[in-house]
Length: 291
Figure 1 (tube, rainbow, N blue to C red):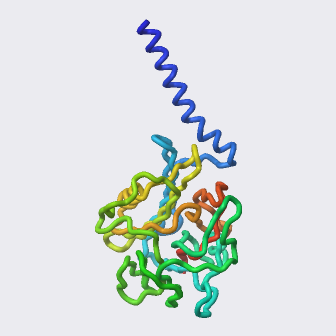
Figure 2 (cartoon, rainbow, N blue to C red):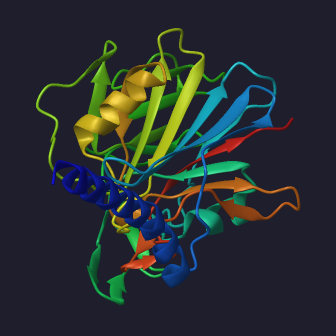
Figure 3 (spheres, rainbow, N blue to C red):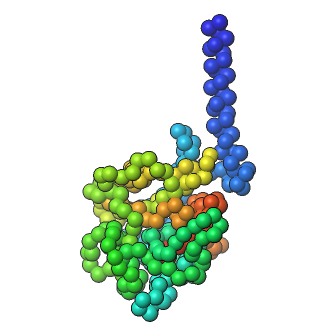
């Protein structure tokens, strides 16, 4: 009897393992996803991309870019304003890929929150070209075009980067959602329950490595997403002394320029419930890698 019970347990364990392994494959077939694997590649001198894939205890796909800001040719750009009339929304919404195509950056990540915004299935606002206003302090190429409280990233012309405190004369400023890491430790009180797509930006202790992270989420059997507490832990694991969350959910997008000069999605965004569909957002953080 004990032998039969032990055999049954082994068979059940093998069946469970097979189901766990097959589930991502089934999801890939249904959504036309290509099953990812963990990888590491050099995008340019001093710029490393890592895709980290985990299947247990729940599926998770993470994208991390480490940028040596001291490398020659590295420059930054926050989306410039489209409209300069006072009282008018300063930006026209763009996807992150559209931002890359228009401004010629080599890496792009979605920026902070914005208004107006709503989604009800495939009925949503904004579409590309619709007027929007970023939430929080925002500057591009020395021109401040939005203001407000909240966590803020400052970047000077010589790539001196700081959070929440101006050091030098900033050329680009980007507002975030919330702080994740301060002094190398997770901010107290971060949510530990809700998993969702996430975007974040951080800086190491020396101020020489910028850390970008985008986490895929809301795609069952492919990637569940992260809580804010988990996102803070991830940023610390990659060396962040300080880090803040950017706009998340369907906005989370990471794009690089491919060898043919075209935008290439590194992650799987999920706008309007559609895997792989990019959301038009207000602003972005772009990085130039060449002279």
